[in-house]
Length: 155
Image 1 (cartoon, one colour):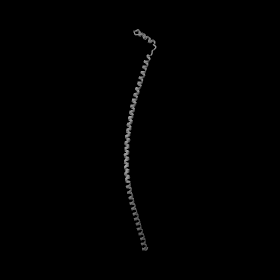
Image 2: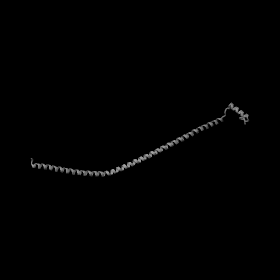
Image 3: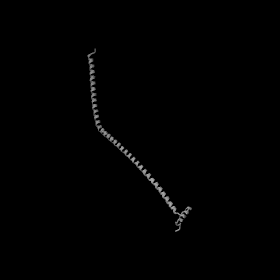
Image 4: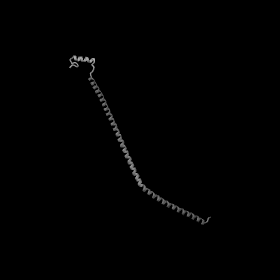
């Protein structure tokens, strides 16, 4: 068998290794604990700084939502107004067409009346000129005179 002294040395080496391992583990645990505390403090600082930004972003999103709703309502109003304007323009165009057709008809009628008056006036003016009597005209004058009317040129 082996000597008890050698066994004790081996037990002492193992115990020393365990104590050393425990010390390293405690050191790592303390370092990790400090690291966790620093990380938590950093997270708290970041949260404090981000809170106003998050509030501002939320308010901005509400403003954007309000603006988009306002723009949608404005678009609906403008679309309705444009539609109404288009309807009114079409009605006005129809009325103008109707009035134009009516005035054009009156102008054409007046033109025909004017041409008729011109023709009548020309006819009247044409009769004032001394006409060369036809045989038929001479016969009518003779019959007229024979019935007791004064002859032409006789006063």
